Length: 143
Image (cartoon, rainbow, N blue to C red; front, side, top):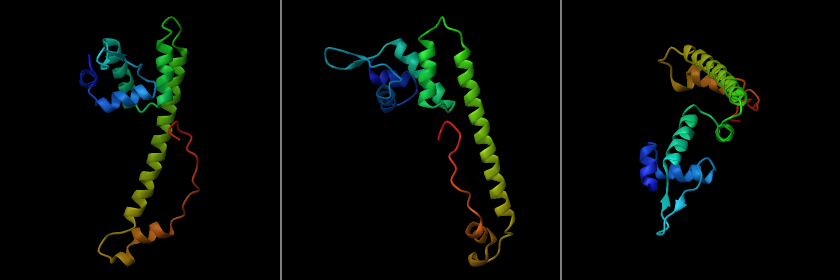
């Protein structure tokens, strides 16, 4: 099948297919005599796998690790479980960060009942006077 057919089968764009090929997440296709890419059902399965992993917010390195594990079907799935456990921990960290952000925004919003001029708005004052935390290196897999 050609690249457009592969993209349609995996519900993505041809640019996505090319990107994953470039990233090494999708093996290069054979070329026809006319130099068209020729994909197989294996490409469809792998592309769907990659897209499903990305939909779960996995990094390319995590996807590569899972693909590497899939190339060794007889080996135990301990590595896969560990990878998912780490990913779940990263998601938990992000949830905690987002909950903290929500609390901060809620406090700011509650500080103003509306009706004041912008130069008297407590939200604007809070944004100006609020202590900014040092930029921390997030411990999540997203950096």
